[in-house]
Length: 424
Ligand SMILES: *[C@@H]1O[C@H](CO)[C@@H](O)[C@H](O)[C@H]1NC(C)=O
Ligand SMILES: *[C@@H]1O[C@H](CO)[C@@H](O)[C@H](O)[C@H]1NC(C)=O
Ligand SMILES: *[C@@H]1O[C@H](CO)[C@@H](O)[C@H](O)[C@H]1NC(C)=O
Image 1 (cartoon, protein in one colour):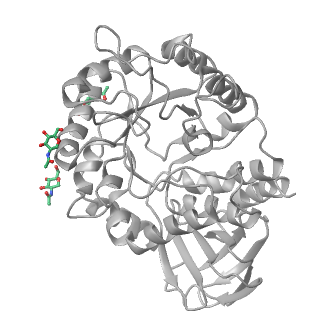
Image 2: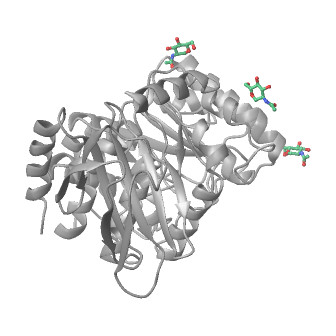
């Protein structure tokens, strides 16, 4: 009960409102082209991997047919380099005619027929980061109208080739322009990432009113260093970031790179666990046509997705960062449950970490259970002072779902069954 009360109070004191388009009451999930496919436009030599309608149709097929959609991964999102280098005679954006011969509206229809949603990319400035036509202030309304006329469901608006005052004017303007189209279009704002991600240059109250999600920090790259930097930055600035998030308004630590080349198995599990703790959007940027079973299992872990999608929408935080390079992260969830991630930034060998909830200053239900979300193993009859030990591999994580012993026992048994099925 106490946890629930704390949550309600937190919700009530939460400043500001969220963008009133009814979208993304839980963090959005889907696929986004950028990290894996970048600005590869060489369709002559690399037809399967270039930015083209074929790539997005392939990914839509995989999302719809390989069990992703049912788990919530519903967005198929285009990033930079989709457009022709010139606007048409009426000043409208057009897709590159060689690489998107059917056009974006047809692609949206293809995606919608499979029960998915289509996202597109723009840039508030004179050019996109990749040098394609940008959206200057005078073109905001026209571009919003064009995207809506194509039946697009989401817009990521980048911020290359403009300055701070331009962005301060342009992002609210685009939010309004999208609203005026009458089509619910989720709005992802890269704005704070260009302003250092922190107040006073970033006003998170305002962002929550005009955007559904926003990139706060550097672009993710295909490396563990990059993932660690991002996790550390979110931990170091959680006092500012944590209250900014809530239903309809999310901090975005950037794409999941699980399934690519830079992360080990342990590191992949860590990224997924920390993104769930952070209530982060889950946009995979990988090749769903060739992804391994092992990586799919991480991304399709039902309990982790349930934690990420918790309806309270409270972002978690880093409870402690030890001298032993072990960190404990916690996220409060609905129904008196919570997620606890014990995360290792060690580089030596598996580490045995002993603690108790009282030692972590966490209020718990009187008697509770904890289930390892990756192994499905459960610890029962824990009390607040009970010592327990977890073994964490280097750059790995042990993620526990914590629930009251009695009330959720039946649910947990079902979940354990599911988790058990996911064991390799
Ligand atoms: C536009 O904004 C109004 C008022 O905030 C809201 O009621 C409406 O649902 C919004 N429409 C869309 C399409 O976002
Ligand atoms: C920002 O960019 C706009 C448009 O290019 C320009 O008019 C304005 O002078 C710039 N402001 C600053 C402070 O550089
Ligand atoms: C931040 O934005 C909100 C909402 O628009 C506004 O009420 C508030 O005054 C702004 N805060 C600062 C410090 O500018």
